[in-house]
Length: 229
Image 1 (cartoon, rainbow, N blue to C red):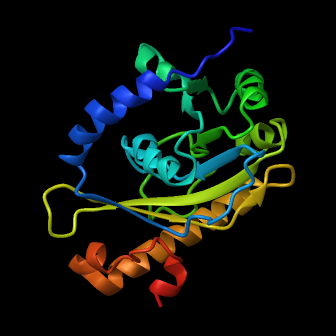
Image 2 (cartoon, rainbow, N blue to C red):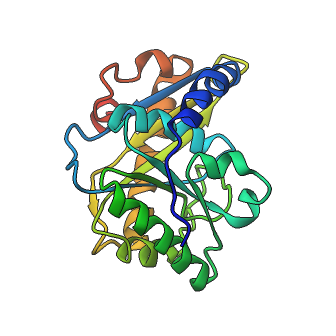
Image 3 (tube, rainbow, N blue to C red):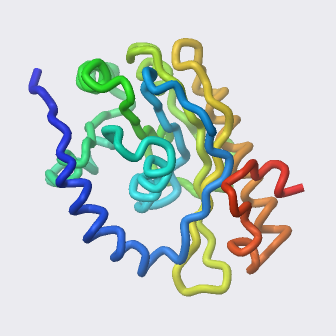
């Protein structure tokens, strides 16, 4: 198996070049509910709905808050990764969620990376396609169960992402995190329900605050559940 070596220079280039470009197209990234404490010896798998082309890049903001110096890996559809070497340099691994052999290959690659760096962070979108954040059910595929249970023991952080234009030309990205789960006993249906719950919190919050949602968002990144009541 080919050994993967993290390329910090690639992430620095990404932050210097791509982030300013993204900021001209995303009015703001608003995050709530992130855990205050993480076990540094357990990998972190972020499981999120897939609502836009921006999602993986938006979750980079989550990584910078939780583990800014840890390796970041993402699981992408093989067809989306093909012909995009810069994404591989950023830690992306291709997968076909309907193909068990493809899932096993991705597990093998990421297991090796996690053994080398137990503080690794992995992004996973179980829907396998972009769908609206208000779709119910979200349609999580069960490949996430095989994926999570065959990796080294890890924490799973369910996250909801929603984009809303509000009163700006560019949309605002709203991100809300649920409670940590143990990868050894996780179920796709449980993760799907929790991500739906976080999305419902976001939609309720926006319904309550309207165009002022960005300004009213919890400044400390605290629990959106309480802020939305």
